[in-house]
Image 1 (spheres, rainbow, N blue to C red):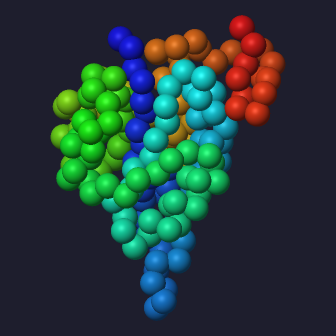
Image 2 (cartoon, one colour):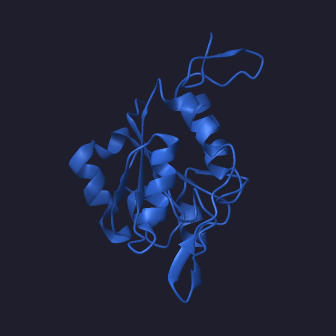
Length: 169
């Protein structure tokens, strides 16, 4: 199986999925450690793209994802598969999601991943469920899984090289 894109939801996958409000509105989201570093290992092999359906919190998500060096799009959870089909053949896509509508995407793409705190129905439809929760290195675990399953397994004994954390073979 050849895959070309790894699409990840932000809220509940890259974050803990909770929204933090004050009287002024949504003020922050919690993002985990190591996710960016692990995703960089995938850069030589696959396009990485993020999506978020959180209109009010999109500026927060956009800031973090752009700081990581990846594109992000605001896409309703119910429109994700259509959005994917506009960009890639679904059989070329890996998708990581946690929400109650992500199983619709899972049913049409090549490979699906959910964090272990995903909606139970979505989790049951996933090809792979991480041991970790969203914002607790679930994306890092997923990235290493994708690397091993579809490309070249990460070898922690080999030295990293370059800004994108490519490692020598």
